[in-house]
Image (cartoon, rainbow, N blue to C red; front, side, top):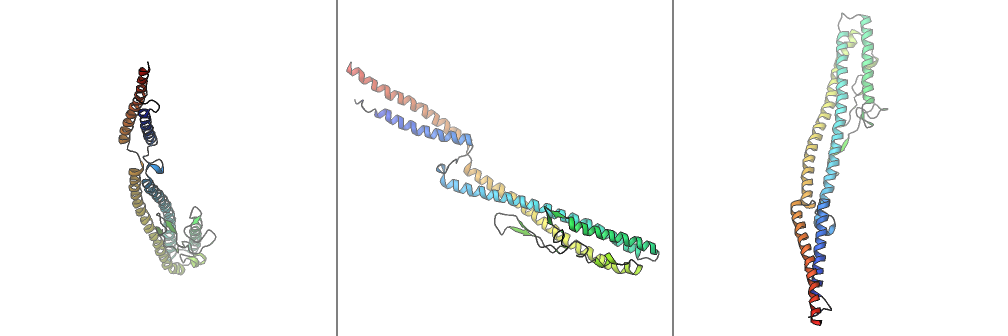
Length: 279
């Protein structure tokens, strides 16, 4: 019997070291809620999970972008809706001026009303914006037409939704500039009725474009939300710990650790029996 090297004790220590390492790993997973806490836990799984997380984050930003774009289209639509109401009122005023029962003084009063209403259309065109972005004309200082707006609604550069563009919802864009400076008479009022009808058709066309864009954005949002949910679920399967399974594993390693400690003590006590031979 050899006592210089306690092989049984060394074996027990080696097993205890491995068990304690597994026990620490199990505790780390249970405390963090993650099956993969470092690359060594599952290198390929970590790479896939990180890619899925990036994809989910990108789609999440796309959802945010789309929701902001929906708000933008709603602002533009409501503003043009108010302009449409003003144009309706202008048409009513023109119909009033186009009849022979309206006096000269009445024509003058109607002209003042029409000018004020047209000024308000210009005010709406100038003031309507989203986060400083003019929606009904090129800018607050320019009455030219807008350019198309591109909304990023996905994780790649091609995932975009674009507005129709070329909106010029002001007196100039609606073709009512001459009405703004006209002298109101019965004949003039009758003449401008067709111009007002054309301006209403133009406004309705722009509103329809924004409405279609809004529907497209809302559809894209719903699709992205479904994608994000599924991607997060896929990441969870790879990255998150199964508490039931890991708790069972922890209890198993804990029992093995306790048994190993007992085995180590027994391996050391066996060496004491050699002393009896020397007595």
